[in-house]
Length: 280
Figure 1 (cartoon, helix red, strand yellow):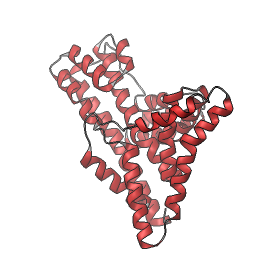
Figure 2 (cartoon, rainbow, N blue to C red):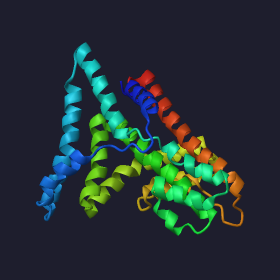
Figure 3 (cartoon, rainbow, N blue to C red):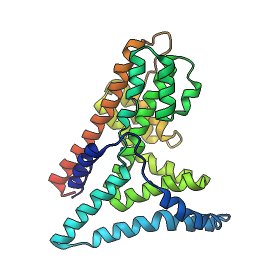
Figure 4 (spheres, rainbow, N blue to C red):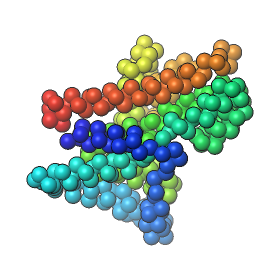
């Protein structure tokens, strides 16, 4: 069932992608306003988290699991595809850096800087003082976008079902709304295992010799943030400005995007194998 849901969702996402598409979370912000006056104490904060994150995820998971029979299974399939498509979003991220690549191909590095700042929302661009630093920031943004827009949600869907994936999305939104320190720790804990698994996958799908050692080391690293783990694995050796070749930067950016695509295929194939041999 999970493989079929994933397959349908990925195909639908590919067909319905829209540049600049954003999930509409105004409903979440409106509901959050009812709890903001009661979040001064820790108990109030935990109550808000339970009501906004845990309870919806549990209700969705319980309702899906309660469906049975031919009609129930068909309804469960449709609901999971619709919910997972909403969770993943329909933003065509590859188109976001298309204008950046066009500017780069014209050697218009100032234009590339503006495109990166406007479309990718990269905070590091303000610290990019040369094309090499700018390109590294954009490359890291591609990896980060794949992780927080696809892999982390797919992991929790496979681990605990559609309710867990929905709760994962709500956890991100909860932290954005309330900015509690413990909520950030929850998000970091939520990202820990999928980031390590993705790091191992990038080593298998990419430069195994250089990427596998940092990916293996990250399995026992409980201090480094998830994004830093992925950065060290995907880019084990960062180029310096002296050895940076601007003409080849566009190709390396495309290679990074293709690497993440191959990792997504590996995850889907793994789910397919588990479905065939274990009925996962």
